[in-house]
Length: 184
Image (tube, helix red, strand yellow):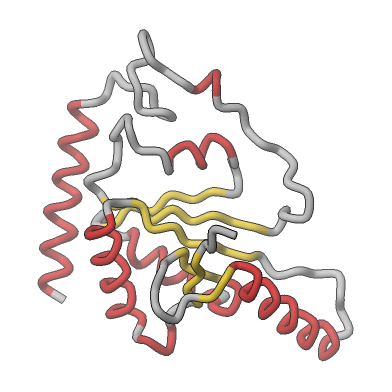
């Protein structure tokens, strides 16, 4: 739509301006490399027992990008090869995100505290049950589907707008399961 194209054009221009203004920052932690780079303090986690098939998708609001105080970027450093960054508003990133979600909708969840959100445990049980049915149908128990968790990175207001934008794009029937984190 025209509104989406206008939003993408404005956000992309904003991102280009930020990148030009902050070109002397560390490309990984976005801090000053001379005085406050934290990369040496954030080691990559190579082995996560039982979670080798998990992928984290960060959908970062363009206003958060290159912010030294942003913490989601640390996941890119902690879990290299398992974490993907998409930027809300950047031209082409919404299409890429939608393609990723639709490539395996049943194994993708959005971390979002909505009314219909299920616990992580319930989502994992749902996936396990589905995988059991798939494996008994195909007699191939050796392949596990990749689990994808989509994290919306922004203020609550911007994350809510991102969620609504994705729901509008996908439609309610194509939205991934929403998962909430219960402090138990």
